[in-house]
Length: 214
Picture 1 (tube, rainbow, N blue to C red):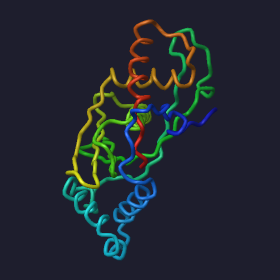
Picture 2 (picture 1 turned 45 degrees about the horizontal axis):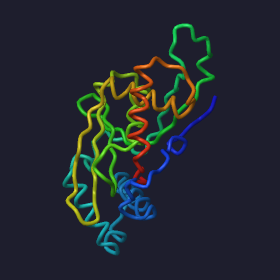
Picture 3 (picture 1 turned 45 degrees about the vertical axis):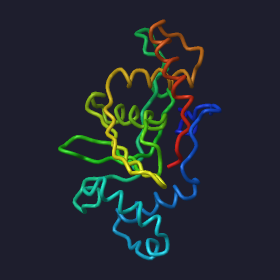
């Protein structure tokens, strides 16, 4: 069994790829700060010394105040996995244990009994390749219909207005993402012509996205 993470699927960056809004170190410090807050740990000294962090935390609370409610069912940096079947043909005799396992870390919230993915950071309010992989893994891991899955992005910015964007998932995006993952694993895998064209179209768009480090 081969264990894969997001870094194994990072697209080849094009010249037109978007750049990170802040250095990765700032992203990591902010993520740690939010995690400490959600755990109920004191962070006032950090906020007092770093006004920019204080501003981002304030904006984050305005975008999603329920995240900071103690009774909120929120699992931060939860590790989930899903097995990627490289061939879905009926005649496939490969053992399930031989298929690669994709592992991601994401934030899972329970809203009215349904699982929702949450991602926050200083990032663009668009769906990155890593967001798509997390949605695919979560759908497979929890064995739910793709139409029942959502990703809520809380996108902060150094100078622009913060945004809360809800991305709905569906069977078409789920299938295309699976095809893209397979293509990255086995470029020569045989699929029908329609699926191949769809996967190539998605792969082209995903390969032009540079993930904002979170």
